[in-house]
Amino acid sequence: MLENERYGEAMAMLRFLMQCQGQEQKQYEEWEALLQWLEAAFPQYADRGADTDATAEDEVNEAELARRHARFKQEQDAGYGNKLLHMAMDEPLSEQTILALEQLSYLDLPEIDDALLNWIKEREIHPLLQFRVLQTLRRRGMEGTIEISRGDEKAEIEIESIPLQPDEFPEPIMRILERVADQTEVHEPTLFYFAQELWSQFVMAVYGTKDYRSMLVEEDGMPDIWAAALHQTVSESLSGHKDEEETRAIYGITDALRFRFEQVYRSMRLFVAAGMNTP
Image 1 (tube, rainbow, N blue to C red):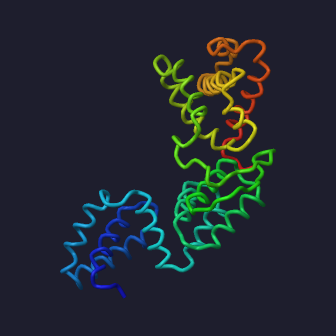
Image 2 (tube, rainbow, N blue to C red; image 1 turned 60 degrees about the vertical axis):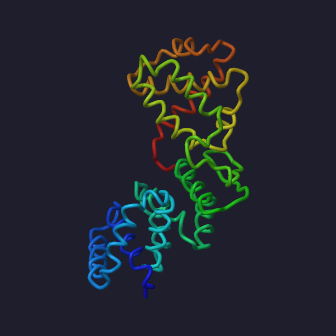
Image 3 (cartoon, rainbow, N blue to C red; image 1 turned 30 degrees about the vertical axis):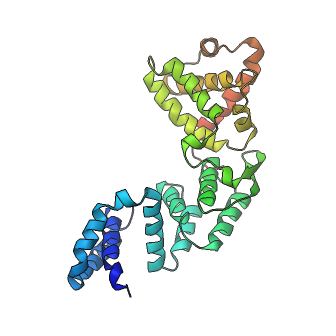
């Protein structure tokens, strides 16, 4: 039973939930029916609820709204957490997988941590999806270091250091993209757009691996090597352009650096070729 002073808040929450996408139509109908009942039974709180709804974005941030939504669903359905775990872990990879992981970030159920840890430790899943799970664990407040397989490597990952936003990655990672921007942003904006997208996905996929650690090295020409490899990979993907010599010249990749460039370039091409297919 709702406390009297919370009827307005409940109405505001229902209005917010009805604006969210990704639920079944039946769910929206149930929310609308409940809202109509509350407004009819407690009209004195309806205006207060509307005021709260109108200022919700000013009062709480997106994460708080997502947290409220997840906990509201959990209160409605005690098995909601298990349903989300099943959607994330057992159903085909889709946008719903990512949405399920986001919702799992906000549920106060300790068994979720164990389920997610066992999943990424014991099952072979795509490294991008692995990274999303690691982000979920960090959002849930987990700390400490875990060892997992990242591709063909064993990687030690510090959970509390997992970047949640692009600007949380170390500066050397961003400076590599800036090198590509310097060469393409004005004259080849399409190439730079796709370079941004590919770099974002690739960095998440190799997080914690030898490739990732080499991106952090700002000596021995490594920033230029990675920038050249990114440029060449996107150029080849977009237009079939395979003139590596021209790309290497743009970034100053000498013969002494060519072998390392070829290694890095191969890593990026393998990632693009694999797509989102789970091994």
